[in-house]
Length: 216
Image 1 (cartoon, rainbow, N blue to C red):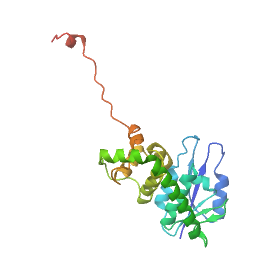
Image 2 (tube, rainbow, N blue to C red):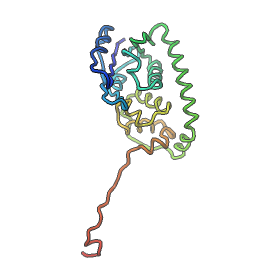
Image 3 (spheres, rainbow, N blue to C red):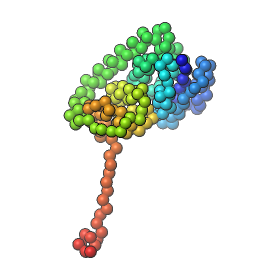
């Protein structure tokens, strides 16, 4: 059993030392840290690295739950995912420990709220999903994310996040997110996402005056 620490420093915060001190007092030696200078794109590249490192039986330790995501839905989905993987989450400020005695009951409540949110989103996006399925599956290269982070991609997508938002949350490229979604099968990528997908632009140079007049 290993305690893995995660620190996220927001744009209005000056240093990570306060969070690191709290984690060190809890006996955490391995700490991953993200520093975000932009409120609208709270990139958490090192959180993705921490999830690649963590194993069943380990505990992810944070100062507050908001370190784990920019929205409540993101945080709850991550707690649910880690719970299924047998990974506990300890939040010092909220005094919450999903690996403790009450952890299983707490995860059941979290899972119920997540399922409710997913059901509501499915209702609002059903038309788009059917349209995507009609287009068929698109092949891609093997995924570059770990199984845990691929599941995280799917949960965020199921909650209504766009590919751009998911790539920002995981600190990875949109192409990597697309590959993870496409491996699931038809319907994983909807209309809104395909409009945002990078495309190849080919430019042709205009003909010279000589060629335009048929001169050799």
